[in-house]
Image (cartoon, rainbow, N blue to C red; front, side, top):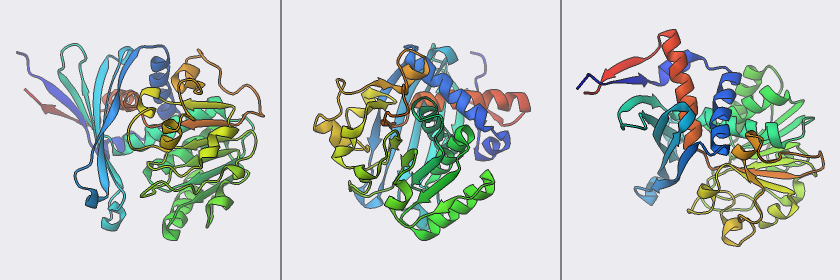
Length: 333
């Protein structure tokens, strides 16, 4: 047997790659297009909750992207109290394999990949589903994915007004300050959900609730807005889906089951079903189904997170790393 090596990119390597906003969005959209064209295999994520008292769980995501010739498994921990230990709420590892032989090909730190690809899916969703004239963003939540939501959305829309809110003042103030410095424009940290959300053209809800609580009120959503709720626990009212002309998800298989997700109650009560679903985002990205068709449409995008996006972004990072001579090769066998 020939020697087998694994390409390894740690967190420092991925930082050194300095992936541009356009590179991140392009890689993730390629994965979505492949999904829309039926060129992928995706299994619903599974969860491991070691102990409820730890206030966290692991997500295990699995997928195959034929055009990229890659299969992958990502394991990511999601622990809401990690800030008390000076740690990010999420840590992840992405493993890539040869889909024909199962040979391991690469291991990547997936912590920032998770953040980047989540923000990219939010941005790509807005590219197809938000009004082109969108100028006001309201963002709930300040965890790792939140930064990339705002950064990549602003890359596409160049907002006139960005409002952010999270439960802890020190968290939202620091979040707003970092964004303002990186984006080169004012970012307002607001003290309540209503001030953040009401009248915004794009609303993103990435809260960290311990249990479902309808803090985002349907009456605050203006006609023609795009609403992107993806908190682990639901923060929206049941009536939210009633004002939507289109409901789009990233993968219906992952949305229709499980204990987590912002629209879990809507699925369980029949408000969201295959009959009421407009499309998966990949079908829209691939041009197979319509995105926004008028400024008056109020649209909802719910994304749970796709292994396909992790795989696509991971492959793009490996290609750039090879070009720049970044990373390590580990002997496997």
